[in-house]
Image (cartoon, rainbow, N blue to C red):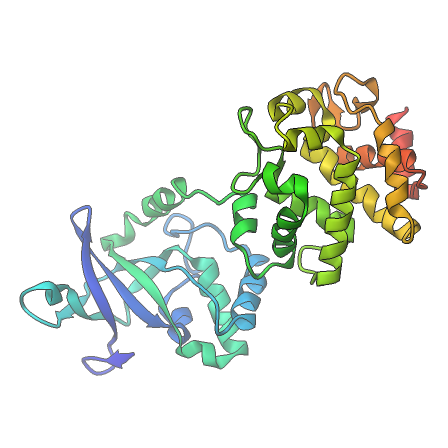
Length: 363
């Protein structure tokens, strides 16, 4: 940062542009200045002026830890803000492309409100306090001129109205920091049925799709299988065990194998069988965790009992377990009740909490 005109302005390298006939600027701001530059005091800025939702304080530590833990390999998108003040832009040249490159000076007394990025601002403030070196890094800021801050709330609404969150499967495919995501990608590569039958980008399978599983569903089921939480590290030996388990499961699922060979339509399986849906996959992961624990030396042999299960949706036993009023349900209770039935077939005892669910079901 440089100071211009004594101590009355902040000056940043910037690019000038135009949106909707109004000037806007992209500036690279040192992260140590972000907390000072942007106001986000919920008492100081009332809702009728505020340009953002109320700060969710629970999100801030996780984002701050992300910055600190990945100080040499993090990514932060730009902050968008509105300025209720006149600014001064001094271009590098008077003609040509460089007329829109220069130095942007913002008065220190200007009121600047965040339209998008208040959680990034709070996380940056927290991270810089714990790791001061981060304060020398930069984050892009998109500044809009907004006299009287009349447009800032509409800008927030417009920015969020058209935002689309990526599916869980797509996030799993692209996330190379998360061990659970790495596990899911590993299993798609090392489990025969998963290799050809997994939807990699969407978290649901369309009626006409040739796929049977989703990448996010494999991640969730396999995390349950290994007894891992979202942030736990997963060793290579555990990944190999999970692959061995799912390959063994597939060996006792003739319909999965037929779908892999294109001998049966996946849409027909989804229409007629419980085992073609995420609730069954997740339940197999939950029951598998108990199987691996109770029979570490001979768990594969016991899986042959799965061939006795009638997976058809017309089977009355699935109502209240995998089905709720005839519709598949991935709710936690239905996953647990489906897993209970699989446990019984495999000769596994039920934990007290699972037994309580059975008693509720039978009331």
